[in-house]
Image 1: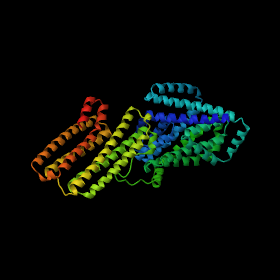
Image 2 (image 1 turned 60 degrees about the vertical axis):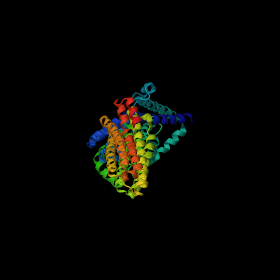
Image 3 (image 1 turned 135 degrees about the vertical axis):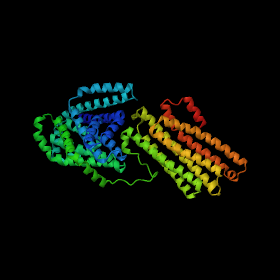
Image 4 (image 1 turned 135 degrees about the horizontal axis):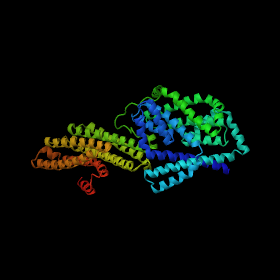
Length: 550
């Protein structure tokens, strides 16, 4: 029992080490890896090479699948190119299996020691995250040695030898078992390394090991499909296409396992090496055969998962991809796009508000008020999505972006609430009572509203691009808007002194309306503050003054 527990603990350590390496690499190089993939999909062959390189670093074809799937979901990468990347990703993870199968256990204490020192001394920096990766590598190497030692002891038991002998009866069962292990471990790499270690120590026969390797490859394809099940259709297309490649590979390589043992084993006496080289051969063969089929498989997948019809603005979250949460930097980008979607709905409300003021369209006013529920729903969805992004996984710049997105969505939600209140006032104090603004008053409202629309679009640009020049322009617009609001309040009082009937009847509504428009503008202009602060273009005293005045 003790040796069995040691084996289970070593397997757990291997899975955990793989997780540390994968998440650590994504935290340090996530944005750069995404850029590498995005810039290397001009043709299928460079796409394959990028898949090999990224997955060799990340050590997870599933993580690469999630990144590429998100690109397809956002329309940044075509499906055939994404499938080519995945062919390379599978080769990349098999190359790493070969590397880890070598006797590198002497590096384990060095990696763990150096990693702990870096992680503890610089925990919240890129150096600390590199330390996390080194700890993961050290644990993986240590776990492989412990697995070998534990299985060597276990296989000396007659009972265990009898049980292992029963595993040679059914290749389909071995493939199924390997697939389940890859799904449970969330890593085909860990499963293949475990299988190689067990076979190398005599824990399982070589033919059983090859069956488990086939299953591990199939399981990694199923895992990516399961992980993206709740994503949009375009995102789900990549894992499904890659699963087709896996199935083709299993069909081709299953009859060849006997030939592999017969013809390759004499040249590779070490069983562990024989197993990982079979894993590499599997993915190389699949890559060679399927590189010319990416277009065909893409068309088949698109028929099975046809593109969704475009949703009307504001109907539901469009960009909050759950699969992107595995890559925090990618999830931040998804949340930012959804925040802009929320701002688009607010813009629709703001444009409709002006039409209601001009035309007294009561039905439109009621429809616009319902849009506020959409804005609130998007705010809740974005906020919930953001809480699932690990703050520890973000670097300093991404951490600021996280805070900026939350602030932006809160402001949009508050603007939606203000517009709803204004609509209610217009219904009660203007439309239902049949009152009209004076011609001069209406011109003032038109001027403020036009500036507000321009400032909303400028604020969205600042939020998206982080332009210091646009942020400065936005603050200038805030001061100009405030001056106009003061001036128009004074001219309205002058019209009251002249006993203008329309101005007297709508006085309260007019004053409240321009005041609320000013509040909306202040919320929009607050987008500029973090941009200017980060650039050192806004002194703290200036910030306080402008907030007080706003």
